[in-house]
Length: 298
Image (cartoon, rainbow, N blue to C red; front, side, top):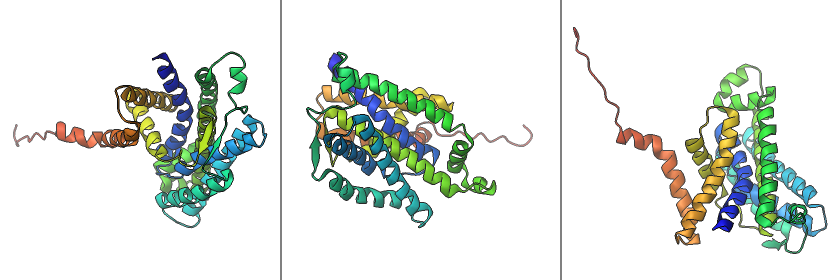
C-alpha cells in the first residue's frame, strides 16, 4: 500500500508540471489548447532520443522544453498570424506532432533501461525510483511555481493575464495581444514537454501514444485543485494545481485498487471532468433561484 501511495505522489508531482501548463492556456489565456497532447509526447521523444545518444539527461530535458516551446510557437502562429481558430490551431499542431515525434524517435517507443536519467544521481544516494522522483519533482515544481509567480507579476506577465480576461482592453492600452498569446502558448507547451521528459525517464520508456488523453488529465487536475484547494490568490492557485494533480493520482490509484479495469481510466476521467464543469448548471437545478414578488404598497 505504501508503494502505491508513493507511486501516486511521484506521478502526481511530475504530471503537475503539465497541469500548470494546461492552466496557463485554459484559465489565463482562455484557450482550449490541444497542442499539449502532442507536446508532452514530443518532450518524451526528444529526451529519450537525446539520452540514448549519450547526451546529459538534464541537457536532454532542457532540449525537450525547447521542443515544446517550438510546438507552442507554431500553434500561436496558426492562431495569431493565419487567423485560424485557437481550437483548430491546436488540433493541427497536435496531428503534425504525431508524425514529427515518430521522426524524432524513429520507432513507436524507446527504452531507457540501463541508461542514466535525471533520477540517477538521487538513486546513487540510496533513494529508490519513487523516492528520487518525489525529491526531483518537489525541486522542479517549487522552482516552477516561484518563477511563474514572479513572471506573472511582471509587466509582460500581467499583460498575458489581462489578455485572457479582456483582450479588447489590452489592445486599447497599446499592447500587442498576438505577442502575449504567443508567449503564453510557448511557456505552456514548454512546461508540458518538460513534464513529458520527466515522466518518460521515470517510467523508463517514451511512447508515441503517451500523450493521448493528457488534456483531459490536465483539466481534471486543474478543476480538482480549484474546487478542493481554492483559487483566491495567484500563488494559492499555482499550489492548488500541484495539489490537484496529486489528488487526481491518488483517486486513480484508489479506483484501481478497488478493481476498476485500467482500460476504463480515461472514461472515468472524462466523466469526472464533465461533472465538475457542469456543477454550476447542476446547482441551478438542485437549488433553483427563488424570485419574491413584492406587491406595491407593502
